[in-house]
Length: 449
Image 1 (cartoon, rainbow, N blue to C red):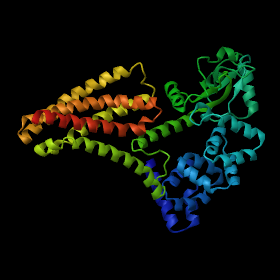
Image 2 (spheres, rainbow, N blue to C red; image 1 turned 90 degrees about the vertical axis):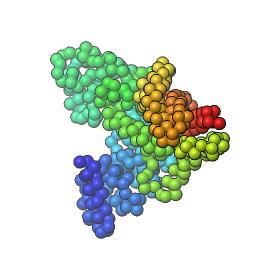
Image 3 (cartoon, helix red, strand yellow; image 1 turned 135 degrees about the horizontal axis):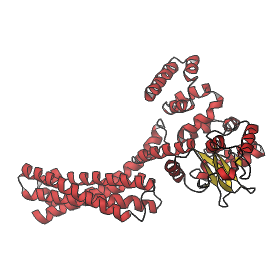
Image 4 (spheres, helix red, strand yellow; image 1 turned 30 degrees about the vertical axis):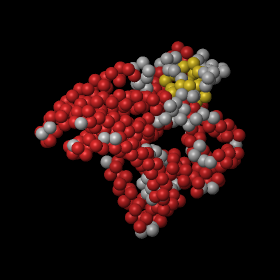
């Protein structure tokens, strides 16, 4: 249903753009939410984006930019002058969102905009900008409600009434001492359903751990998932409360990680513009095509070592692609499993060996089954028992190698600070191609020569 609505929206805006009707364009985008506007911008060529952008409500521009991918956002920010960007940033209510937008700017423009802000706003922004955007500190919002432990619930309620409002996604109030050290949390549900004469210190939860500002956003997302959190406090090294993270920011992290995993398998980035210039897209993809070509030449070079046996036995040339292909598929299954385990923190030095053992046993079982099937088919086809035996044994060898490589490659790449989702597939393909060819043609050389 949502996809149908988005497609209908694209069709409507395309018709309005074809008619070159400003009023029609305005009618289409009026009433559309921020997420839909961002999706619309990303799904249109740059020329059409330029026609839509001026028609968007100025109060929505910041949110729209935050929802778009990095490349689309960066390109649009390059076109805007400093005053316009400053107005867009000030229209965003949350400091973490303001910081995200500022981080998309070149350094000189970022500094220039910071100097235009009043001291209070600048200090709040600088406190968030001091942390990497991929950490809890980079995700946090500075708007939270803090209370003392030695007051009654009635005092807290009166304090909230005086405030008049509370930040969005507030499900708990944070308790701090007079030096702002984090002590615990009081859920709003407990505040509203208990005796108003009770003290906060008797009702507060001390088992709700704060998140340190320097932990990764992936770990933050994992904590939110494990404990079903809506918000969480963030503290510095001295355990001082400096902000909070809310579920809406964590959802963005989870979505970005999912997109990253999918796009990385093809050597692309989740932030790439779908309608980027042809030359730009060709350069990006050309790099990975070149890497793949090198691996193909390596496999071809290995085949060249067995040129004599291939000339003697035509059946080998016909069957040669089967073993590398089967090993590659088996290895990819293991590789995907391991990358997921690493991302979720389910895999570490304590269970590497157990996983390797399990995956090898799986590959042996699958190898025996499929080796028997392929060997039988090859014997019937070529009426040669040796050909069947060669391909069957080679298949088992390569499936085991694929499983072994599928575990070791992402683990090794992670230790080298290389993203296994990007480089793992290329390395695995090379390994299974080379081992599969060597096993198949090597056995053929030994048996048939």
